[in-house]
Length: 148
Image (cartoon, rainbow, N blue to C red; front, top):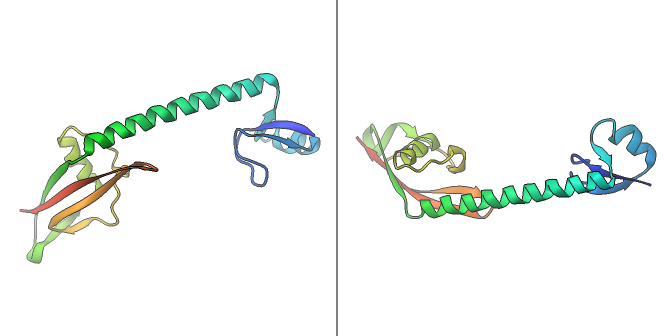
């Protein structure tokens, strides 16, 4: 059996970064030539462990950044003015782009992809909008859509 480190996910075999045992022909003739794996030498395993530590440190930094941004968003509300028609309907709609711009006017920079809307707002009113940073870090902001 041949020990290899997977460089990318291989269905039925394992995920990237795992050390797996395969038959020599499968490793030499399929996995290694296609760049899906490399030999599990002492140097390659040490390099893999180093990469895992770097990735873990980066994930910890991003998680701390997300927590800080969620704390900054706690209790934030924005008002967005739009032309209105009859019965509280808007001419146009309010989307994630508009919400991100309103937050930017309050010196809070957020990627609009983090703002979760089922559909754009088309009526005047107050809405609770979730901002999801990662799996378990979510903060809700209040969006007031005002008619002009």
